[in-house]
Image 1 (cartoon, rainbow, N blue to C red):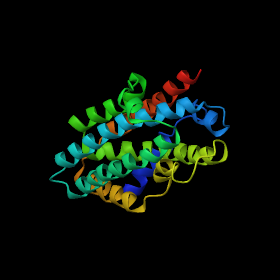
Image 2 (image 1 turned 45 degrees about the vertical axis):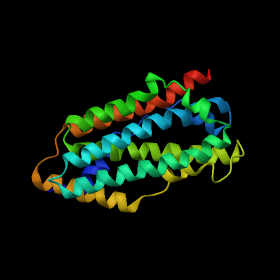
Image 3 (image 1 turned 30 degrees about the horizontal axis):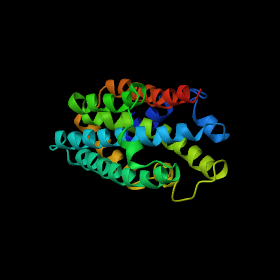
Image 4 (image 1 turned 135 degrees about the horizontal axis):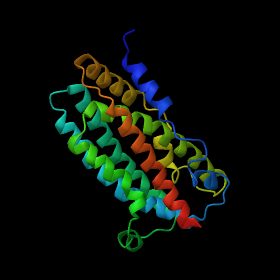
Length: 220
């Protein structure tokens, strides 16, 4: 039976889903037991991560110049990172972060392993393999953001504006999903998808968990 792009992406999301309970921080936030300081660290780590990922996606778009569908997908991701960065400001304000504290923050290696690996993928991985890997990771990330956004309102009393960063990633993105399907289908038709797609996805999921669990360790 011929596999479609929808089959490939659905398989990746299912097979690469993180184990229940592997993320040690999100349940603490959901119950209101995580200190506000760890939320502040989250916001400051994200500033570094988003800036790095944006550059990685732009590089992947450049490398996909001969593949318009993949180039469109990565360009959309880079644009989304710009929007996400803007949405961090209300969260930082709600957390009482000023320019001095943000500028003086030193990021954690465990939190920045994810963007470092994404940059490595941007340098040499098959772009369509990266799309498959990212799709699986975004499914997990979106679920975490839904949980955190709800908890910040219900447990921490944050406003809708302050939760906008999490809402942005938690909401469905049908246009991006269609772009991913188009790019993966083009990759299937050209025989460019390789078994490394799932390896990349597995490692992205591991580095995603490392981000959250590094912060959980800081919270004590």
